[in-house]
Image (tube, rainbow, N blue to C red):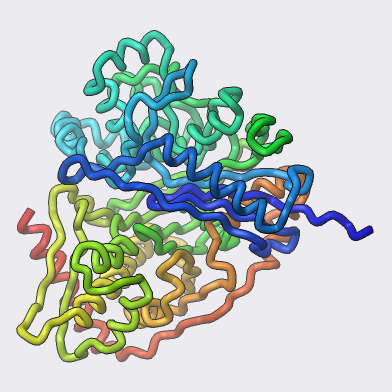
Length: 499
């Protein structure tokens, strides 16, 4: 009889879709279940999800991935969860039902609250404790908004009847049928309530945002015992042994375990993380200091630059302008663009992230002529991602005195575009390495989960298995690069000055 094949199930809950991926003992993807869900935009700058729809999509994806290879619950050794970070869910402790839609990380409704707190001089203390900037991006003001704006909710929260979690906590609660209310240090570090130096929820910040401690999940390592799935979900309990935020998970999936290693993920947004080891480096350039990974109660830190709009700009070309029918068409159009036209798209649809952090500015296009068409606008949308990445790496080099790595490891949907990755290398004047498995976010969670149960080796062993599928090297002249970057800086300056 053939030996039974075993798998790790990675749940990758993203901003626009949920996915479940089975990985085998060689880290290979054997099946994928995917389901998109509805994005709600109740007001300008507001973004919401229905938590029940997220939960349903997760169940659908998991069962689909398992059915594709006819796996049994016995063959799944562990489950790892990675998730869109900062997105905020509050639910009833008894029923598990959300009391409001999930407020998504992109949501800007609390910009005025953040500005008021800045005016009162609170940002320095918040940054010192959390490594974050005072911005609507993070969870704290989203929780406070729900408590203050949904009728009867604050009273229930103060009575201990409500729970808060980022998406990982909510899924864990549902998967364990309410047995485990927990998160990991990477997700906790994105709430603006967690002291990343002391490794605990911060009482001063809870008081500042008026959030009851009883709502908060237990904080554990990124690889740990998080309980097991309820028997009714898969027919047999399966251990859940990893939770980790999606961008940190991609850092793990890219095997960037050593200080100085950089990964850049191109999904809905773009997120660049630089591993700084056991030292939490404070940025002078509005980068975030965050927990990249926590194992054995020891955090590894990172500098992070967050770009709100990357792949979402391509979605805008498709759904807003309707000049493409599918994402790959943006690359096709870009190759046909007139190189004589310098068109700059600043995709500040929900404000600008690092290193500018302007919640109020909005998107703009510069350099339009009578000859500008869909090809030039598509090219500008793809180039905007490259320029924004350049902004981040320039300030990272300034903050990280040990010097950044000489190569960037990329992943995410946009990394499949050869044109975009070549242009990225041209703009950065650096090699860009793309791995054969672009599902690095899911792979990171799967690896940690499998490592926790002995299915996968130590981080050193995992690092040795990392391979690149293709390396992109710059072919652009230094003069042209300088000209293009000057044009981008001018576009940014004009956009910021108009807000």
